[in-house]
Image (cartoon, rainbow, N blue to C red; front, side):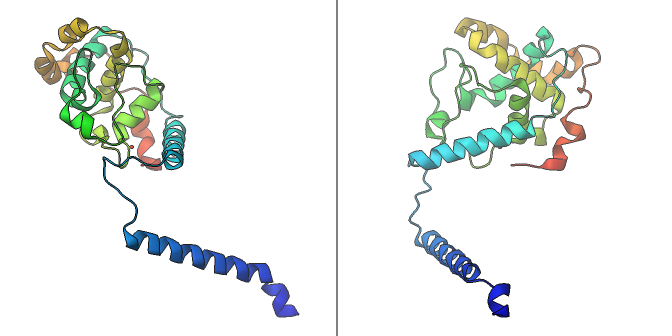
Length: 207
């Protein structure tokens, strides 16, 4: 009786259930039954689950990010245009731009940023800085400062309102802008205070 109270029957059943699930998962993995090809989309339920996990993961991690007060400054937008043209347009496209070979081959498809993202600027910053696992979205914070990433956010938020001519005008000097943008930043805007660099890397994250 004492042994039964210490280890109830339901406990044994739980152990058996866990063991069966682990064995089933192992067999599934070893069988290679799941198709990981980029041209074989996820099933509807799995896609919904992954979308929900991604959305909540980004939202939670972006909660403490503080956007700079001068995010709408035209000089930020101009420097972000150069970054976007060189770093992002191949996957996320641009006004008047036809789908590229890489944009058509990605899965999940990169969102076309000529449409509103549905994210807050803080969430956009987090995604650009840290990337998204298993999506093709790079973690640009490895090579770019927070200032440059905020410049990119500033431009992305303007992008849906641009025509093809507007985009060409904004990016025509993108190479030179990319090289000199740090010298053209508004005074005092080198890094937002209380920003991700102070805490973002302490709760890593994914992308």
